[in-house]
Image (cartoon, rainbow, N blue to C red):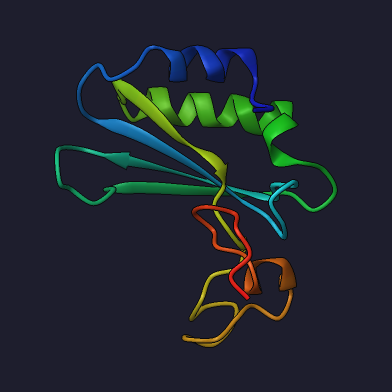
Length: 124
């Protein structure tokens, strides 16, 4: 992965209890992340009670120093004891029902129209 050393250090600590910070990256394809979402999950089987999104257009957000610093600050400010992250880009950065109609494919990200966001395999 392309995250900062400080962020990797938080990830490598493993499960240390709740709250847990979850990190997911999104992009127009499986190589370039343009959005990151960090959620704070307060307890087992709970939904995130705090959520923050960051976006970029020109660079892979995983390598953006300022964004990585803000993510670490957000995690610490919200008292997360553990940090987990998906091992891949998790799909399109646009939101169904917000950026395009529910039940349809994103018109701006044709890559994800034919790839499974969890496995990366072609689904066509």
